[in-house]
Image (tube, rainbow, N blue to C red; front, side):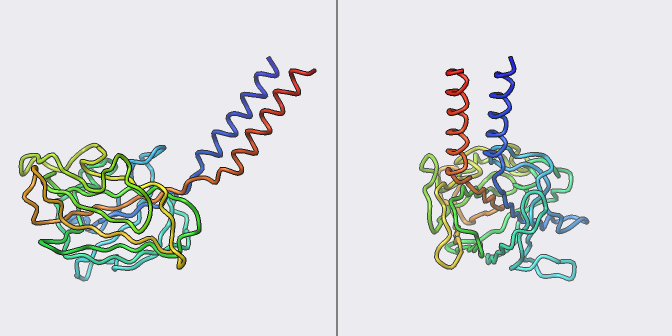
Length: 249
């Protein structure tokens, strides 16, 4: 029984280390309401997301209440500064009053950084530490009628989905409420920063059979660090050695 407890404790330690991936979130928080420019607090599409995850906010619209410029520093999902920064450019903000959706995916999908026609939006993540990342990109119009085509400077699109194809909900029905791959978000794996420490993302309209296009919509992104395999391998070797020693005794 003691042996089982020790092995179980080792496995829990292993699981805890694998779960300690740094997550950096960013969203358009110009929410067209009295409580303007309120960043999202809530889950993203990544594994282990929680209702208390912190999101950095941006909003390009120019007025006296806007504290979120087109460049800024980034904190992780716990609110701890990372040293990373971002710069973003796009056409205009579009959305609906999202104040009643805080804490749910609908808050994220209610606000979008949009480009029209043949326009292209661009986001650069800077001072990104060397490593491998999963990148989640959210793209939905506030009533689920459009989407976006994404490009990333490195990595591969999960499932071949590099664009979102919103389900075309009826106008006025409100924002989408769940995360669905290829519908309102895409994921790129094996994303690595370039020699200058940057990851570059663009988006444009996605013309598909659910939408005539006319607008490309970007709600935000989640950058998730992939834990280095070396420490995990060492833990695995240590566990194997422990089991072998117990068998010999």
